[in-house]
View 1 (spheres, rainbow, N blue to C red):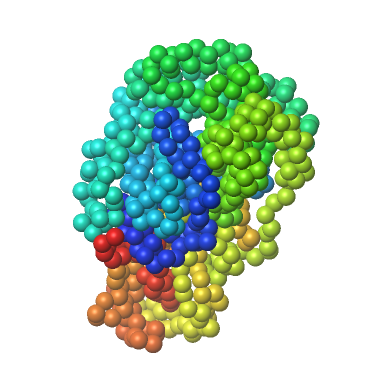
View 2 (view 1 turned 45 degrees about the vertical axis):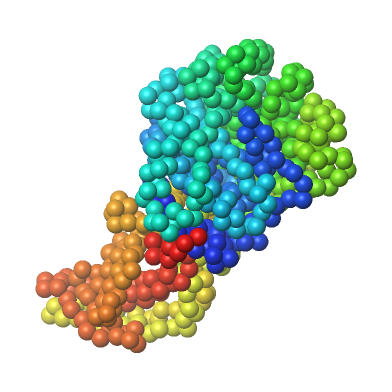
Length: 640
């Protein structure tokens, strides 16, 4: 499924409306918002201030503009944007994310074209600044500063290509794009934006040395980014730096992940430890000469053989994240800090969650980014508690800033050495603690009336799943219309239409990349993204998905496929009409057929199912009761 970015006007209208209503914003409950901190958690990164040291890692949480809004509400102030590369027409397998216990994926670069990614990041930049002005959490001004970090890969030729070079230039100065986006807004929506918004989206690149990035090219890529783009660079390194034997010993023996099968070739072809140290030393000198800053990041995910049944079986490899990666990445960070005497700034990603984030930050690793944990129930809202223990840590150390906290605890090298020793022995990272699976019931999902546990809403990184309010219906008697042998319509009893629940789950297809994560955590079988009502933003995206059931809705009209058959519902001053192109019916105030029509030459036995009418009418009415992707275009656009 191709992602279809939504217009800035719809996103901003929805944001403004939901802030005003003081309820959920983009389906994130208000109690999941970041509430602020008693202490100063700000960090200086490459000369720029971020109000906190945490944010989403490059991945599914930083691809679309609405993702960046959700991250910000959860407390993120450093956004590592999803990795882009010159090859922007990848065919990503579906499903592609499996967080059943630890974390695996087969998704590894942008799913949008380069131009689309640039526009999404610019829209996200404007929305973040709208959030700063609207300030739905009533945070202090010092808690609003936000940075974007670019992630690119995977070869020098690709990064030097005209497409990527111009893309990076626009990230440095996005004035034309930002002006264009602002000009497309109504005056009322423009008033939601601050008068002054920086035109530079980012001045820092995190270089992903993954997916075949040749070791001998890494240094030349960094030097090119210094010289051509005057960008600060963080080199994101791979777990393979530990060496095959040590990774095997840690994962398979000490932690007990005996089902994992390492890929020897990925170790043989990757950067080696001694070469990495020598390269970083040379690049530090080059950075100083260029007037840029250099850092390293631990770490990318780990390539392993696909031993699961979740991904397509032709996918031979997958990428490990979560708890076991935390041990590998911390071990690497500790070893690197000791080898370089803590002189090189280190950022971190790998198995971050509520129980370890504050400890990693207190070791001096900033920023800290997260992906796998945000894909679990609670979603973006999990981040709000990551730094809860920091005030207590500040008080114990008598510190006023994060840098003082690290110094009082013995400095980066010492604290990382101690933490790495503890992590390897901590049972919470071992296989025995991470072998369970989400609870499943025996029931199968259908279009309506699931458990309405809402897990599928929170675990979707794109906010593609959402709730619709509906009435409980005890049972409406149904009489289908069937073409008889004379070409006339007869009525046939067809059971009842009933709804048990007052909340129904729906899916916004244009924001759904069918990653499969909602299926992992749904307690019923079938997958919400497959079986729940799917809505498209336009007739274009609806027709492009001609093989799928789903609906496209505008005020007064709803067109949709149910079981592959297209139906049209029209509601206007002349009444309500429903049909499938062969049979049409006017519906009376009581919900029953009032007048019917059948096309000449209709096939004998053709049936218009009135269950489908009640399903579409119920969904249509429910959509306008809440703020969502479909109703966003009709929301009032009052001044902010």
